[in-house]
Amino acid sequence: MGDDLTVEVREAGAADVETATGLFLGYLDFYGVPAARDPQGAREFLARRIGKGESLVLLADVPGAGTVGFAQVYRAFSSLTLGTAWILNDLYVAPSGRRTGAGRALLREVLRRAREEGVTGVQLETAYDNRVAQGLYESEGFVREEFHVYFHDFGRS
Image 1 (spheres, helix red, strand yellow):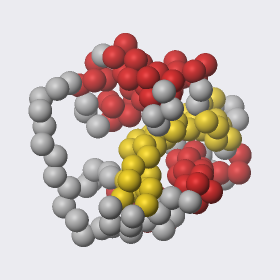
Image 2 (tube, rainbow, N blue to C red):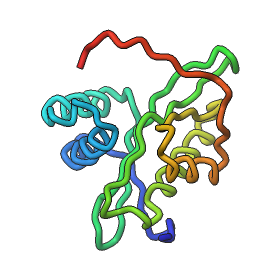
Image 3 (tube, rainbow, N blue to C red):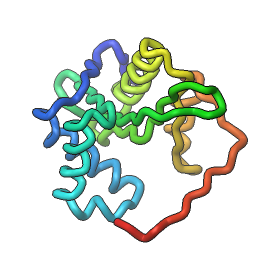
């Protein structure tokens, strides 16, 4: 595994939308989301989140490989903790950046910023069969909750 000290993590701004969109499309494709077939829609979605400050988007740069990963965090309120929590909604590393430490560096930066901002915790979800991601999250202190996640789909794409 790579050493995350060689990975630079930075916050994405308007100038990074194209780069972030390429990674976002890879993420959507990884999860089989039809939006991956609509690059312009995905770009507009991401540009709005970044432009309005509605999400925190981080990018991971690896020397010699370029920008290989991204994370997107949404701020939320937690009734159970009476505070602010973060939802790490998206974390993705392109195949060319895997095993470089980019995923771990992104995750650690999210946690660092969350602590700095005084949030009560960081929540995330991943696929049941995504064992690599589960191993990463658990190695960084995430604990599997005993809650069931439900979703009511209104059929919008």
